[in-house]
Length: 498
Image (tube, rainbow, N blue to C red; front, side, top):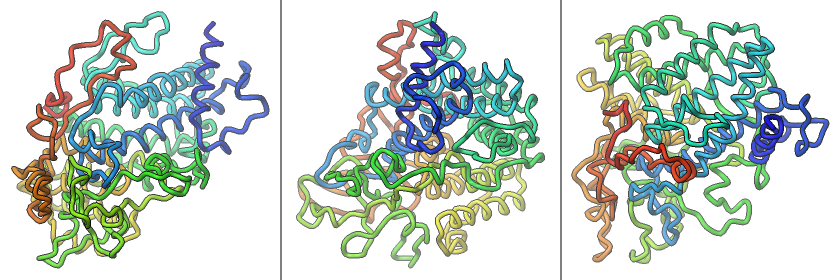
């Protein structure tokens, strides 16, 4: 029975896999034998489950919750997200993709690798498992962990986010202690080289993110300091790259999801948000962030415009009702799905030094983070951003928060939403979306959104005082589990943001 169940999970994983060149096998994948069910076959399937959930759904909703994105005229697919609403149903597909598909494949790899002493594979599966649980905690706050993935228990207990964070940190330490850089790793899309060396660096960077994220509620300063002293982090972005094809079903998942016309789609949804635009382009100061042109295309008149959260301009003046008036993301079929970037790592190190009042080191890593961001975007002018948004040691959270938010807007909006909740920046202003765009009078006044600030969406989620703090528990889990806790509400922070 166990073999049959695992085979069915494998098929589910393969069904979601775009990078089929990495999954070539000599036997029919719909009828895998026991010999085929090895890390070489299962690791790429788990990787693609993660790439699609993280690079598509979480990037999309994160972009709306972070006010990187607003809704295009004439469509309403994500209008609820732009109003800071999330439902238990809307996130269920992502939850299943991670918990039913990726997690079960990773569980099998860990068990197989441990039984066979394959510590490189054990480490790789553990890192991806920890990464996935970090995502789930950051979305929902509480999810099944200690009793999860047990076929005999259909109603697992939901664990507190702190328990899960502590658990995955312990799992990472265990795997790092067992693996060495010379250990071999199965076929992988993330790190095709076959060595555990890159996985060790990724594990360290992931630990740095997790520890930093919980540093406001738990004293982990010495652990962060030890990681930074060891200085064994990735020197390149950790990303799924070089595996996407210019074909429907095999392109970058964000590129496909937003219905790009390359594949016959007739609807477009995502446009640049005025909050991000006004931070990256300040007309009265003659300031333009060089990354803006890398992240978004100008409109049909070759100018940059920003939409307003909470509306799709259905009652707008004719000018605003023209789809060519708005600015779309610069997305391509072969864009990487970035799990962690060099700029993010540098921002995390900068925060450690700023918190410990080492202004020299903090400035060094703040500059390095912004420079890495510009290098990634292929843009010039990072010195202009340093001049416009210098590091303020008296309010380092604001400086880091705003610049990390801008950096991540080009490729990883989910992490931007997470860091906004933790750092408190960009901060929510008193400006209402109805002041930016009055649907009754059709007056559009985008200039009232100050650079580096957010605003309350039109028809915003009424329970919120700021941004959305968490997802409701996924319907695909909650409706079948009597141990699902009472939902604490959209305004209730996850543990690390309290």
